[in-house]
Length: 275
Image (cartoon, rainbow, N blue to C red; front, side, top):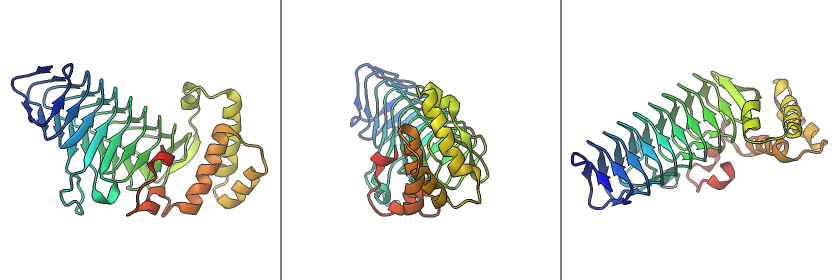
C-alpha cells in the first residue's frame, strides 16, 4: 500500500495493499478501504465506513461524519460507498442514525460532484449522478441511474425513482416518479427522460408505451390520479409502463405528504423495493 507520511491512519483501519492514501488525509476508526481505493490529499474518512474497490475520494471530501441531526446520540452507525465511485471535492456523506436503520449507503458507479451533501440514512442505488452543490436531506432513497442536477434541494424522506432526472435548481418536496424529468419549485413532472431510457437500452416500443402512460397520468393536472389509474388498468401494460403505473398507485396509497419514505418513519425502511 502507498500511505503518504503526512497522512494520519488509525491502526484500526483495514487498508488493502493496493489502496493509496495521499498527504494530509485522515482515516479515523475501523475504516475499511478495498482494492484500488484512492484517497487524494486532504480526504477524510471516519468510523465504521467501508469504501468499495476502485473508488476515488477527492480533496476535502468527508465520508462517515456525524449526522447533522439533533436526535443523534453517538450511536455506532455506519457508512458504505460502493465500487468505482467518484466522490469529489467538499462532498459530505453523514453516517446513519438509530431512527433510520443505522446506515447511509451509496451504490456502485456513482458520481457525486463537488459540494454535494448526502445526509444521514440516505440510500443511493447504482449509477447515480448527484450534481454540484445539491443537498439531500435525511432518509432519502434514490433509485438506480437517477440524475440530480446542480444546486437541487431534496426534502427529507423523499424517494427519487430510477432513471429519473431532476433539473437544476429545483426544489424537490415530493417523490419523483421513475423515468421522468422533473423541475421547478416545487419540482413537477414535465416529460419522460427519453435520453436516459435509450441509454439504458429501452426499446422504442417500451418508450412509446411509457409516453402513453405518462400522458394519462400527468398531462391533466386537474384529473384525479385514481381516475387516471383506472384508465391505465383497462390497458395492457408491461415493463417500464407497468412499473410507472404501480409506482403512482403505491405513492397514492402509502406516501405521507407526497414522500413515500415518511410512511416508514420509525420503522425499518424497505430499501430493496425503492432502488
